Length: 475
Image 1: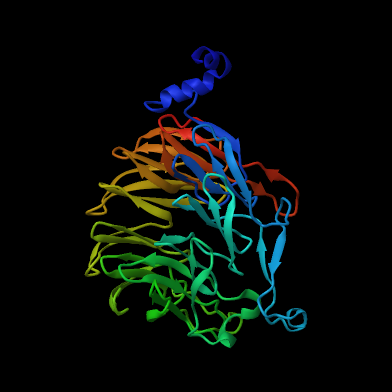
Image 2: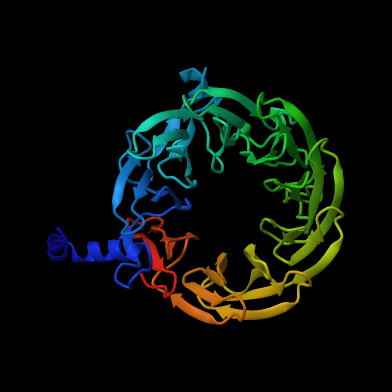
């Protein structure tokens, strides 16, 4: 049998023999055509699962990239960016066409959400406004749930319940049947007539949920016109019943998803803008962002801290007893329980999500233009914010991950750097841009360079899914 395998499948045999110990250059990496999306791949029980811009969920062999199964969402659609519609319940044809009331909501082929794998089932939301439960071994559909609007964020799974958020609010689904247990509706505090053309746009999808000790937490804020209150909301919801435990209405806009730890709920929101003026119905930005620490039990604000901003959303990162609060202008380290400022790092343009290990906080600053970016990766001491090293990276850069003493960052190129010294270990420059590079397993980094469709033309750049050798950066 060994002789037969050696003669017939030499590369497969070599990979199998080396899999349990180390990888040879021949079988360490691979590359397959892949449409890409914002879905991050995950590995569960030796299988790689990921969603695609073609509207399908893929189960792949992480060793060689072979497809184990493929499940197509958006039934009835062929390939491409076709639009599908889902009429709202109770709407008549006359209402939808002549009055604009309960008008059909639009969805499209494509999956931008990350799969969640639990107990032999893959849970994932699709751009077709449906949430699916698939058999992890075969890809067969167990059930689907019609959410009737965009699903925002990946599911949270707990004790036989899957929680998803849409513009309506928080849905609790039975993971065995897909039946809805309850629906918690967000933004009920604002009258519909004060929202920005709610019949056409609907409500802004909620963000979260984040699990606390005794509650689920989520946030929401409305599309804004001059008549819309400058309010955003933090909700605490009972997991068993979907009942409101408390609501905190904050002054401001553009609230972030909640982060929960040690009995506190952390969010940031842009401070209220100036009043609307002729020619500027939305008013001017406040150029200020506020971080709130809210008591998870009763919803009362424990402390808050402001920081300068110009555009973009802030980012929150918690490590040990410190919360790191980043805007495009400043990165601030704050003591969790008291809100005491520990240190701050300022720059012209701080971009992306910071990452942390046991020694450093890593953040990218941007200069130049979109066409010619000049980005720098900085390693800051956790205790003081002092810069330990910096490294300029061509092709633009975002922090991707930190793993076993190696920092991975990149935009058009992917770089591996030594976490202690900042020296470049390798770079991979085949990709035009990276949508995902946050998974490392079995000595491989899984990265997606997505398909790009040129507007107004039929020209398409083929995307790829890579498994790169973590030691060399080679596929």
